[in-house]
Length: 193
Image (cartoon, rainbow, N blue to C red; front, side, top):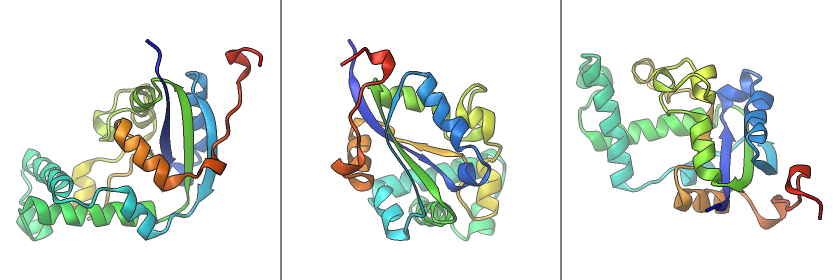
């Protein structure tokens, strides 16, 4: 069954600064997704803060990932970051995300198409660039890793944000777009009107 969906993509400051906007967008269009909104902006901190969850469960999960990366590389999080509490580390990591996404312009893209959310996630690749498969956006263009980012007390630079699921896509579309920003039209491969 085909499922027409809309989802949000953010080309992050590192993708913009490296001149990858066209290459990133072309991958979605080549796959058959339709660009229905496109804008470059310099996001405000409060806008990015609303983009990422502020609940303790999400923040603690992020802090747990920080701890996993440190354990994997035999690094003492207390020496490096001053804590081993997942909630505290998650709060630090969330602040790093806010710093990262307000460090330069971003490009907001809304795409629509069959199973758009899953297709965008597959094209984006794994969140951690070192684990992203070659052929994906992160696998081809991102070179950062979590341990280096944590040591430098910053977010992982991974080129792109892609909504994780339908609920997240709906929330993000509401935050980042208005009805006037999204255009409904037919591509030539969709047949004539």
